Amino acid sequence: MELKKFMFICRAACILCCFSTKTPSWAQVVSGREIDSAALNKKGNFSISAYADIYAGYLFSKPATRQAPYFVSSARLQELNINLAYVDMNYKSERLRARIVPAFGTYMAANYAAEPAGMRNLLEASAGFRLFRHRNIWLDAGILSSPYTNENAISAQQLMYTRSLAPEYSPYYLSGVKLSAPLSPKVSLSLYLVNGWQEIQDRNDGKSIGTQLEYRPNPDHTFTWNTYFGDERNAQVPENRKRLFSDVYWVWNPETGPWKASACLFAGLQVQKFAPRTYGEPTWWQANIIASRELTKKLSMAGRIEYFWDVFSTMIRPVAGREGFTAGSAGLCMNIKADDHALFRIEGRRFFGVTGRYKEPLRWSDTWLCGNMSVWF
Image 1 (tube, rainbow, N blue to C red):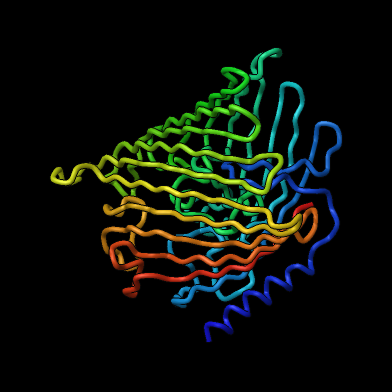
Image 2 (cartoon, rainbow, N blue to C red):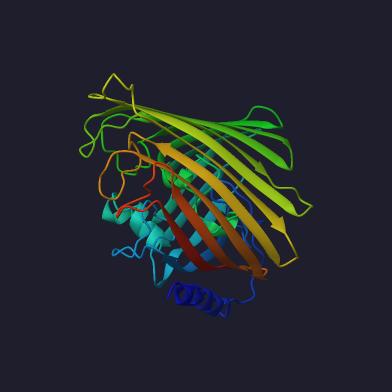
């Protein structure tokens, strides 16, 4: 039976290959947090592009909800579906820029469910102004891409098809203002004042602060350090107080050579009003490393290992509501460049419950298979 399900995934992914059409090429696939769509159709200061991520997935534990637990990306199971489809509209002049990205799909439905109905289909909506004519200092406001961790929601920009637990449990988007400026030819700084931890509609009276320091010693390597500080109390978790979070990640994306890689480490602390002092304040952390090797001009293989530690269930609550989550995963992804603007992928991923239980019903491990076709034009 399991073999039949695997063949279903493969057949569904192969069917998706038939939908490719000829359009301009996509940006180079590499890990990175902020959305960076290629300006495929440009006229003057305005550009527009579109993207669709179609997938089919299967989890060996066959959850009754047909939803992969703990995930918002590509999480529907045993069906062909749209993870993310959007139109990216950009305007940029010497001192003004604006971006609107309406989006749809299972990722949007799951990740934006807590937002007001009118905001649930905006992947990004922002406007920015260059403060000085001869200095590259920008002030942007609106719904912004998040700087946190080494992966974003656009699968075609990533080395693996599925997301690691790291971006799933840190903000994919922020709502507020961002000030960005170069400190030197190799170092840039961004400062954020936002409504909260992945919130378009603020759920309390406080505001949160974020920072990003990026260092590019050469075109091949990027090192990034981010921080977050804010009050996270709201009606759902009234005991929460200040949240402190920091991550560091590295992206290696050489222009030549078969290898690419990325790695991320983060840690967070959630101050709570009634936290037991015996154990201290709730904390969580994770680490992941991803590498990809090009085998031919059209074929590459990528692998990832990760570990997520959250024994206080600050970010992840097991399906049955029990306290404590610690798990790791290892995965392999085959990437086929079906066309200059189309990518076909098959990924297998194995989860391990470090504490002897990955999820309910009592399972120590599980396996997730995904087939995908991404197109852009």
